[in-house]
Length: 69
Image (tube, rainbow, N blue to C red; front, side, top):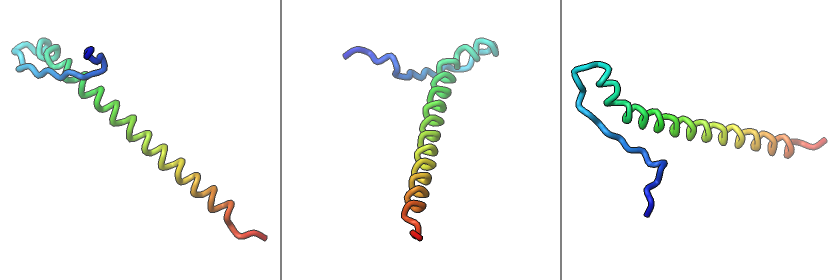
C-alpha cells in the first residue's frame, strides 16, 4: 500500500538550548496542531451552516402550512 501524502506526522523533540533551534525543532508539531485546528474549524462551520439551513427550511414549511384565508 502506498504511503498517503495527507497523513500528519507529529514529531516531538527535546528543547534545545538555543531559542531559534527550539522553534525549528517544534515546527512539525506546530504544523500538525494548525492543521488539526483548521479541520476542526471547518467541521464546526459546516455544522453551523447545516443548522441554519435546517431552520430556514423549517420556517419555510411553517409559512407554507400557515392558516389559509
